[in-house]
Image (cartoon, one colour):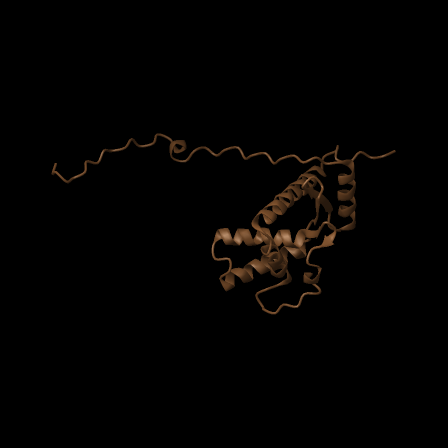
Amino acid sequence: MAENEIELVPLDQPATLNEVVPAAQKPAERPKHPVSAEDKERFFKSFLDDSPYHETVALFDNRVKLEFRTLNVKENYEIFNQIDLDRKSGKAKNEDSYLMEIVQYRLAVSLVSVNGKPFAPELDRDAYTPSDANISYVSAKAGQLRAWPVYKLAGVFNKFNEFEEKVQQLTGEISKTDFWKAGV
């Protein structure tokens, strides 16, 4: 072997696929959130009324109260229409920015109020007039969130995530026989 040559040492071939790609991990179980009888009652009523489920959650030992509501199918479509506009205009260039925008859009449309003060009421679907064909009320509402400090947005988003997990939990439990205890 010449002085400047590097000797290549053969590596052992993996014996099984698990040595190349680790076996899939069991998905983490979703956290369980406390569900009160009042939560179930409100969820049941909103289910029957075809209306959004609302919940108020607290930060800072009840000093900040956030009210969230579930989205309807039309609002979900409007969020995806906005993200489609974002992709076409170059705003959501990659998967990370795409996902980040969707999360902010969902939060912006779901956030009803902060400490009882309505969140961006002038930017609702019916009242908003876009100044640009690429910006709907969804994007305009999310723009309000972008003015917040990062730590505030992170704290509110954390509570929003808990709200959505609880709604998923309630939705998953409605088919269980013990979800609703009928009164006499």
